[in-house]
Image (cartoon, rainbow, N blue to C red; front, side, top):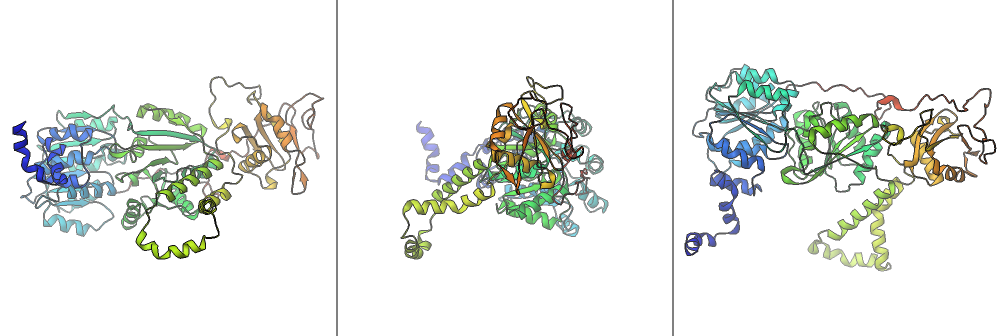
Length: 618
């Protein structure tokens, strides 16, 4: 014990920050002090599992390496810190090449490496990617560089100009290898690696291990050391996965309600196409949300501007395509929302990995229709976690959540005593005729009233039974309708400017029944049919007594056969009216006329084209 105190006595005079740097666990992994000091200032306190397991192996510099770990687990430092230990920075020739799929990830890796090495002399890192000046990149390469971080397309352009010599490259890193292959970069990677020495070491990092990645590891590596953190292809254990089932035409309204129910949301919203991404972002901006889009049709300057705003949190929602969002490494993303499920199931892992980074927690939400339940089950198998079915919150739920978010914000606001002091007398004079309770109510009402007005009479947006697959225990009659539902007629339709959502809200408002107990709704021209739970039929008839619409009595009748002495109007179903207007007596023809065709329309009402996003050269 005496020896221990004597040995460390000089350190006891050090500042706690300096002492922590010396004791930082990264020292134990073999990383030298000047680099550890830099990463400590960046907030690195303890290595993540992938860093702890891979860094000692990579520091030997003697193995090809395959590392499988989920997005957000710290893979950049896992390969970046060993590179900074192994390279000779007195030599200004390219010694390491890092290939990645997107511009954002390329810039992220290059900036991280520069930050890790800020205390090391003569470290030169160049980011090579499309959308930026190739002349500037060539100028940096000519000045001397040890680490090149590149996207395949632009790297090939520079190689084609004979502007770089890879004969001294000792290490090649393939980051996000699965995504590079998904984007069609296989041939580009082959051509780039053919210009590097055979004796180099190749390090491959990936979130998933599809067959294509396995083949690339066999082609470019010799007996690689393979490290898998968790089960292959599984999702981050710190992410909760939820799904909401809605009708296609209600998707945008449901999405907004989910956002409103999470006042502190800082999220990324994934869409399938560039067109959808742009339209959703424009609609959100029009509706007053802090949102913007990120997709391949933006210039690099536009992309950088959007990402700067998002990192500074002046944007609350970033609407992005899969390709554009790769490499986004932003701290404290609370939610990932899948406005559209990805075409490739493996991409769900990459999407959800944008949240719950570095050991934090997050939520991944999917908004689907009933036909997509099969895809949810497939994703569950891939990530090894079950989804939780959630209900779209009601308008009342949203108002309540927003109210208490405002109360919490007021309670915790930081008061600048010095600046506000001069205004206190005038403020107090303004409020002198109000009691404490009245002041509190008025402050709370500032925000609460806005949501209360917006969500007044808000319909239930959860999909009814027809939009979900049949479950064990559901019973049907011979017409295909659930036996515990009753089909009703109402003399209102599309000529009265009702769509299914409007009619659902109208029914619920007049009867006080929950939208969840309303089944299929068929809106016709001058009339409509809707199904309600058998237990709510009396409430419907009672609710529409003496109700009129634009001066016309609203009439509710049974749509199917009933006993002749039924006390409800319509007796034995409804009769043929006005020269054959409609007929139904146990054999109603169902045309499902307003189901939106299984697709969805954009905000101008035109059918949106579901085009697969083509690979662009980065």
